[in-house]
Image (spheres, rainbow, N blue to C red):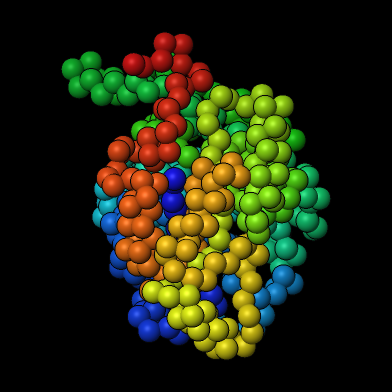
Length: 385
């Protein structure tokens, strides 16, 4: 079983910053994020993802909600991951990027740099987002695109990013002091991408990442258009579903779409996504969640399944859901200070006792942890060994 955690402020619940140990005064410091990732790495998790957006957090889809009793503001996800990278050794680092408003050339360079800094542990979580108040930050469009077109654009964004990662051959850098040749220009390639949404010549200005292709992830919360993006372009798809039957139908549909699209034969990982509130017994976990809801002024529903109970009960649930065709799970701690250690020190040992989770890291790259081969560069005439 593969396990990841999503990091966002003090936790998934909007009142989590008011919990004991939440460290609200440190949410925008590097040390806070370094400590969270270190805890996840101690639990041998595959990766952490860093949530991000191009608007302030809000409980309203129409714009800022004006509330002052919830966390507002966040650090840039890519820069946070790059800051944490030298402080970690094995865990994957997957920042979120909004493809709708960013240029793929910039993103390819940023994630390639993260992969170099982390020595092969970078990923990219691509999201589509276009509410009206967000569009006004950029002035590129007067109105949102239809969903199908927005996800088509995101697919092209990923395709350009992937081609740019391949635009340097693995052995393009010569670094020969004696001859004065640092790079073999014949091993840098124009990608010449021409599509409906982007026109990019390339090559990148950053050498090919250590993984060749950092891991690309995407969420499937919006139904058919997002499922098509996962099938066409992702290595991991996140499914926010409520029951195993829904997960099974979604997994089968995405894999069929991947075959139809003629995507590479690399494995496609599908992760179930759920928020968790864990404690030593079920009533204690429920009481803590109720207390958080009371502080927030109402029950919180982030759109994904929510689990409240013990680590052993969660292990039962995850093992049951795996039979629906899921290969792993991305867990969202309800309150990071409490639920992240409950995952790493409670859930992980329980899964290990059942023989369902690793007891040591078995690879030093994120692709390796996920069982994904390192692909050859698509433009290389003679790929490096």
